[in-house]
Length: 80
Image (cartoon, rainbow, N blue to C red; front, side, top):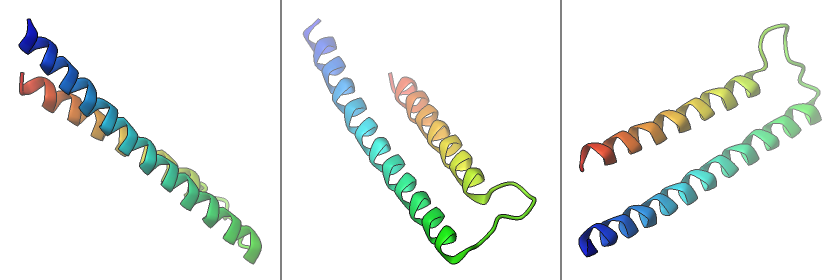
């Protein structure tokens, strides 16, 4: 039981670290997107009739984060 408890504590610690890294990355990417939007607005750049590239970049980023999280979870479950 103690070994299982220690392992659970270690898994929780790793999960907290991973979540903090993920949140930091998302925050940095959001800041970069906001700066890009401000720069585009300041220069008078107009989006064409196609999809907004910033919206597409955010969608791609979010999908990448989800894929990465799922891969990490599956990998950790496979080790057990």
